[in-house]
Length: 115
Length: 110
Image (tube, rainbow over all chains, first blue to last red; front, side, top):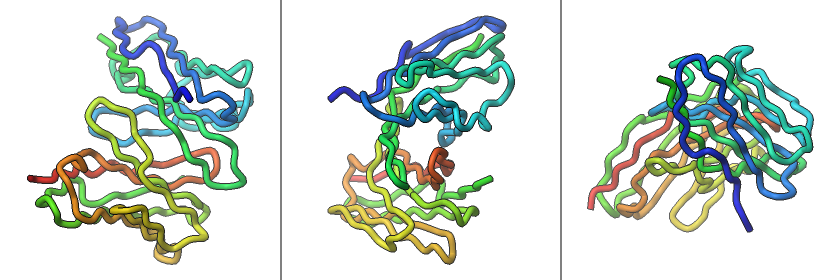
């Protein structure tokens, strides 16, 4: 079946612009995660949804970052008033709900460049 | 919060040799430990994982060991091949959140 997809794959924004990044998880997956990956680093947790509920947003770096998953499927990560330090690859992952231990399946990422 | 340290940051081996990558974690509540392989410009792909009720798991040339007491886990790749060259990430997970190491760049020389 289809894997996790993300769009756009590449986004160039001028500093101060707002951007919206989309994630389509694997059909039926309950959990959805957003990560930020800077060049040469491991993914860093941003936020986590279980169905439409945002259960953890402790990794969002500032109030300029906002994520939603209104119908428990597609998710959007929005960044307002982008700054140069927001330049990174934004990865989305989904997982089926298990009793414990979640295998996460990653999307290809959106590379955001803020000029 | 959880802190994961991964070593070494770079590893170069000759084709056919073994490679070992080690990670330590700080939160004893972490109960799931996946390993990902990421090729340049590609998404992380799960290669093996282990849950906290198991001490060792093997899948062909790849094995992972977990020591809960010491809070460390390791990835072992035997009979390395040039196509194993990539960046490898470990992670420690509590349901809902994964903390990743900084990665190991593995180069397998033919």
